[in-house]
Length: 490
Ligand code: HEM
Image (cartoon, rainbow, N blue to C red; front, top):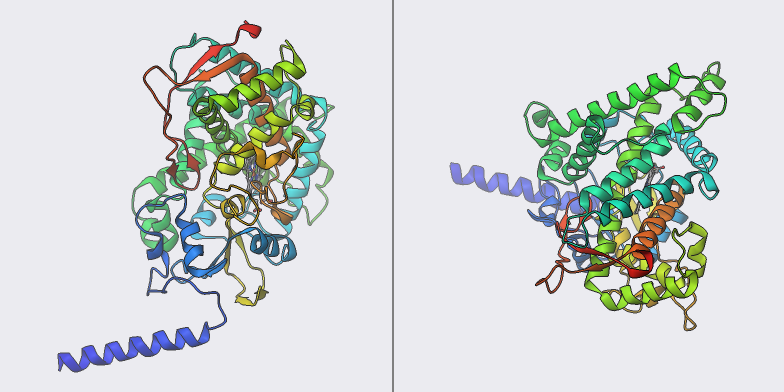
């Protein structure tokens, strides 16, 4: 009797499986979809930076990896990513509202909002960043000041080995404080320390096993303690912190808006009789949290990789130093417009962002309707994962994709060249809102640190480990280096 039941069960499963194969025959290929966990088994227990690349080598540039019952399409390589993000920009400009995203942001802000709310908040964000002076002097001056403070912090190590992680994160976080609140925090400030802890914890939690389990089984995980609960609590604290700053701004009314909150409060007043307005304090608080989460860890990780590569490649560092001396002599501070005169330095910065991309993929999108993408059927509601890393390593686009080679961004005469496949900030309607700010920050911090120091390996160390820690972001392992003051700047 038991034998018959087992045989029946196997038959039913086979029929279910074959029906599924038939009905999904025009979907992109991908790992076998198992009940409950879908194709997530293919990701393995531990994520590696090339996990997704390996999957696309096996299944092709457009593949379907089921996240439990939800179809998730991974798009790899320059051509397919451009087709998805540019030629289907509107079809794929939503973000998926997964259980964790819903619990965390509830449709507010910019990064994970959709529809009318997203359009209004994003438009406001883009114009405000411009008004705050990016591309003009305003914000650049504040970043230069922050870069100088970082130089002073490094100088205090007196050329001895030290770990620069905290100092870099503090500086980058203070740039966002200046954008959002109009002031910086002393690094010993308790609220500031808590803010930094929250950012670090949230970046580590996204991509962890606990996070993945929450996405798959929210009804169970909501009831269990664990890192996912701690991450949600941190987010709540973060929102309270933002609300406190909003209250402070409301108390000191200004005539000329100076920072993101000022501009937003003005906008709220202006549109208070507009019934379609989404300008309210919930969205404002979430926008602030978004700026911090999207803008701190990303830029700080890029700089940490940059210094690691300089210590590991003294020949390249020397060329950067030489170019700076030849072009700018003994200038004490470098400005953003100096970048145009420093093609090699600029090429090195771009190559760091290309070769050691700091996001595992990008930020997922969602299909707002049924779409035909390069001959494959993508159903409405599918999660779209543009693999930006694969674009930055696409062998059809880069001469030596697996090699750290600044020549990727130089022509034969040594002039800097922009490359179309340089897409670390994404593309299309959802392209990174902070791209310009990030570019200014990375240049000013990198150039001013290299003007002041030679970065060397501690005695007895042959090379710093480049094997990354992989989560939602790709971070260097903790390392120490020596920032030896350069004679021209001492
Ligand atoms: C090296 C630094 C950075 C990198 C590599 C980076 C990368 C990205 C990527 C790949 C996206 C998703 C784009 C897409 O879906 O196509 C994104 C979105 C976003 N980024 Fe950045 N980012 C950086 C710095 C910043 C900074 C400094 C800010 C602001 C302070 C910022 C704010 C945002 C926001 C608000 C979004 C969401 C845009 C939307 O959904 O409309 N990012 N970023």
